[in-house]
Image 1 (cartoon, rainbow, N blue to C red):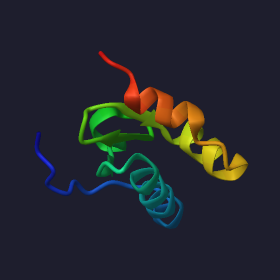
Image 2: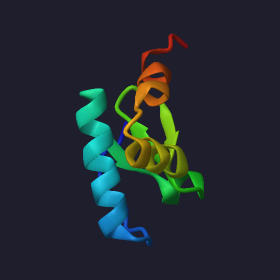
Image 3: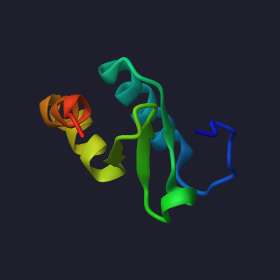
Image 4: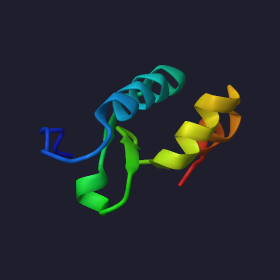
Amino acid sequence: MDWTPVPQTGDWEVVDRLGRDLSAILHCPVRFCAYQYDKPVFECKCLKNFPKFSVLAAQESGDWSLIMERHNEKD
């Protein structure tokens, strides 16, 4: 996996905050991959995808259980 930064567009204040929170909750590094997927998606080092809207909803509600469940799924 290539973790080299890729120039992207977006609301970086929100993306940065969501990425920090997601990484802290999962205990796994994450990156924003809107450029690669052509959608606002975060990807963790385990190659699990988390749409920005679902991460934002978890942050706003304080309920990260579905995000954590998704991260712990066996593929």
